Length: 196
Image (cartoon, rainbow, N blue to C red; front, side, top):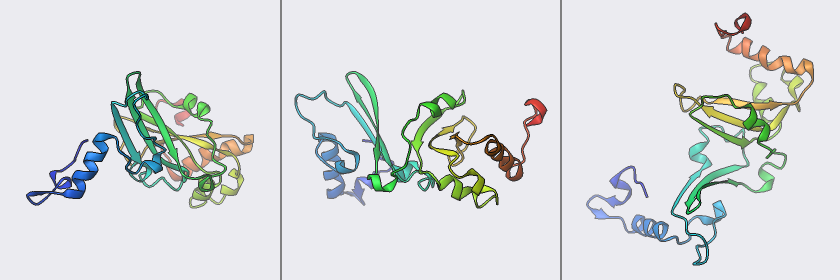
């Protein structure tokens, strides 16, 4: 366990009884908050987990939870055969129509990122958010797929990842994202063809 401060385990000069009990349970593999992440009790015949990192969507979402209400958290476990990752999802009613085919998103991720993650997001939410910056957002209805990726680069800020989405629309609809970018961001790349 890693504590960011001694205050998490101590109250003034005395060891906090509740915090110590929680830490003891976590270190011994006893159930604590496991229902949220679908963890099973450790048994002797199971391969032992040497390390486990569990992070809630509250801490990973950075305010993007509205885009991905079905995402509850992520868990990384290291056993004798290496690292494994698991995604915890909220109940189906949170995002019935979310897409979980991440292959096209991973294939579209740009190179050189420090960290990328693929996540489901609900249909219609991206279009609704675009309505705040464009009157033409209704033309995008149904054109954005429910799987997306977020990538952070060496020089990017934590709260500003690159969003990678899948577009499944007509040729006319395909022009709209670029038009929205030009209207709202207006940046041009000096090395790109025609500065776009």
